[in-house]
Length: 192
Ligand code: B4P
Image: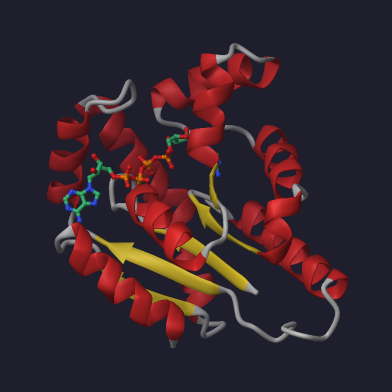
């Protein structure tokens, strides 16, 4: 069972690389950012609640995110594996993933139940992140919001790096290479 989690700051290439690995490994790419942006575009109740947090660069509250991810992970295509992009982003979300992994392993029987979850941390220097995001120019890619997202990342998401490192689950990949070079490094990290 392929289970991959992408950590890394905003603009580190999580979305870019998760989409490529999803094709290569034939498992769904589940991006919480993309799901939230679809809700915002469709003006659902969740989208209307999430929008202000996303516009300011804050994390959307867990009580909104966890139900959304739960729904997605229960869809049939996610029963054989998944690539999570942008989730977990804090300790509460990481605990939720552990519960899901245990539950899916129990449901899948003993066959591949010992396959480890690959946790990938894409490392890219701040100045490169800011340059990439300004060039992308999404609604939340103005310099003030980018700096706030980086601060939120350092405070809430970066502690997960230590959390996974101490569990020997973490692979660190240099994200400051060409897109193809990063994909090549990721293939090695996921295979090992
Ligand atoms: P996300 O959608 O996750 O966005 P991101 O972290 O900024 O982008 P990512 O790292 O995926 O960068 P990408 O590959 O696109 O989050 C947006 C917002 O949603 C958050 O601020 C938060 O409000 C909310 N949210 C999402 N998940 C949440 C959660 N779990 N809990 C609470 N809130 C949540 O790459 C960026 C750019 O770099 C692209 O233009 C790309 O082309 C370029 N690029 C990529 N790789 C490159 C390379 N190797 N070389 C050169 N350029 C590259």
